[in-house]
Length: 345
Ligand code: MLT
Image 1: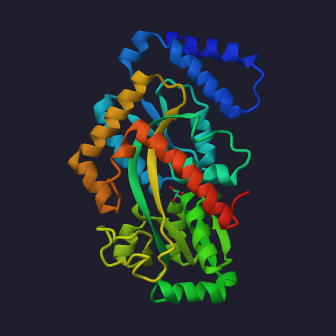
Image 2: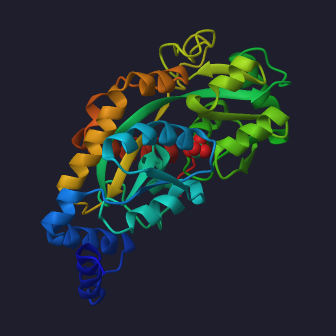
């Protein structure tokens, strides 16, 4: 057994006797203990083997796409492969719970997002992690604006027609989302509440598979992250009604904003960010952060994200401290929005 592993096992054993009730607290406490006992050589040599990045949704969707784009240059910088593991379920909270409870040794990290680290506490009272306390933030990877899209044959020419159609027919319509608390779930809950729509909400393991069904016409509409949609919108296989931002996305210059299209109240944006479990030693957090920051300065990586509509302007949240602030403000924001939309539990 390596010294690192031995230290972690000892920390777990000593914590087993503690009278704690919340699993998040256990995970955090294990992390904190381990952070103080990792031997210096293990820190200096890190990483000595591949790093797992948990993507809490199906392969091929927006979280997976962003993760794979940044994992490649991060692997080059770190000198070890960053391997993507898709662990989907419960709107992303299954994979993030597993990541939060992993050994805080830098070998398990996560690609979280506005749902897993913003909206989830409002919709899962029994959530086994606290986005504000149980992670070591590494940095924001990309902002991902929301686009309202529908199947190609949807009978509405523009956003106002879509709103009217939703109001009149919503009980006959199917809206696709990636699970309670996911970005697609929360943003369309907000849209539905604004326009008074009550569609059947069809759950997928990610909006990658949901998009396949939208293209196939099995579902009617969804609110999704732009990085999942640009190729299909450009190919004309789905209809795009509006980007939920004050300014148009350079990746979709022909798609109006919700302000231009007549629904200025619908302003939402999502994001993807890298997290490690709480208690990950600061030296390792710094190495992971430097690798991510370098990836986001790499011209080819930037181009790939920008071409898919990724927003790289929030440089403040690219730091661990800035990301922590973003998480805190998003938890508060989505708690309010989802309560008002009647989607909080
Ligand atoms: C979401 O709705 O949260 C995402 O689109 C999930 C995904 O990456 O599939």
